[in-house]
Each structure stands twice: as structure tokens, then as C-alpha cells.
Length: 276
Image (cartoon, rainbow, N blue to C red; front, side, top):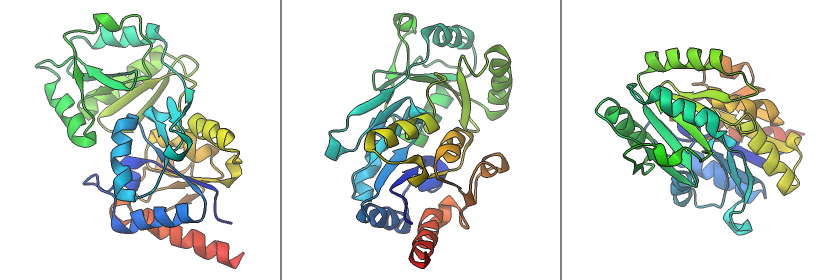
């Protein structure tokens, strides 16, 4: 049976290493949509950054943005926000204070925008994030005006070894019931509400669309994709995923994100469906 919903992580999954959607992958998604299935783009990025890929696909798509902190229906349904979960400002302010003099860029996502304070210590990491995502920054002199806000999430961007150290520190400081901490790349450490992850976002979207989770398929490659791979009826890890991610998937693609692995898996899904 062909799933009624397909959810795709972007970086390392649907996108190749050059941040492009391969022709075969794009055609596969168009065929999926042609079956009547819902297509969902699920990323840690803002919705405005995710939407930039829709013209290349030539289809409508729902969105799990900011790792599930905000979930939107597709354009046909008015791009409604059907779920939102913010990080408590107590933890957000703790992160701001701790990182004030550290060699990391603190990405602060609030009200559909990305904010940061750029310094000599962190400028290279802000530039790296923009190069990777083409998400526009709103630069601040300081975060004082944000103290009362509750952001959708915060990302620390920095040297991978230092990010490893920060991950250990904050995981020892806060438990999973307080803050959801995950990695979406070697250089990224993300902090969200414990009620925000791609698995929760996918469940909320399926409920809104009247689709059983058993009829949903999800593709991913990084730690932040694990909740989605675990909750979907068919969780598929990319060949280029780590072993940690692969162990939570029901299948692993035979090809990587640079080899149109999704298109290859779509051919298998169609073949299996025909033979049922």
C-alpha cells in the first residue's frame, strides 16, 4: 500500500550536498503527490526558508518547521498553523547569558524570524549558517529586548568539537522534561520545548488531516529526525545516516542523498505496492 503521507527532512535527505533537489527526487515527489498522498517538508528551518524549494518541486506541501515547533498545512488549505510549542523563556535567557562571550552564534527564532547578535568571536558561524540555509538574519545589538519572549527554538552554531562539549554540559544541566536538545548537524546544537520535535509535529499534522500514523512515511538522516522516524508507520533512514539514526528506522535507503536515494526508495515502494 502506498502511504497517504510522505514527510521529508531537507538537509542530508531530500537535498544533496550542494543544497539542491535532484531531478529524480523531484520527479518522485511529484509522483507521490499524484497518487493523492500529502507531501510534507520537515526541517529545522524557518518556513520562509523551506518554501524556497517548492518552485523546484512544482507541488504543494505542508511544512513541519523549526523541528516541529511550528506545523503548517499546505497552501491549498491556507497554510494554517495547526501546532506551535515555544521554548520557555527561562531556558532561553539562560542560553543567552551563558553564550554571551562564547565563540558560537546563538540563533534565536521568534515570530517567524531569525535573530542573532554578531560579534568578532562568532561572525564566521553566522556566515556558515547563512551559507547552508540562505535564511535571512535580523541582527541585534544585544538580546535585552528578547528577555520576555519565548522563542520557537534556539540553535548554537560553532566548531563541532566545542558544540560536542556544550551538548554534554546542557544535557547534564537540563533533563528531557525541561528542554528537548538535539543535533541537526555537527555544527548545530538545538534547544526546543519538550513538546516540540518532528515526531510530535508529524502526529499533529496527521491528526489534522485525518491520516493514521500507520499510513505515514518519513525520511531523515540526523538525530533530530529520530522522533519522526520512530512515530511514522514507515520510518526510512538515508544510507548516509549515522548508525544511531539507522537503528530507529524500519528501512535504510540503498543510495545516499547525493545519489537521489529517495527516488530509489520510491521505486521500491511502488513495486511492493503493485505486488500486494
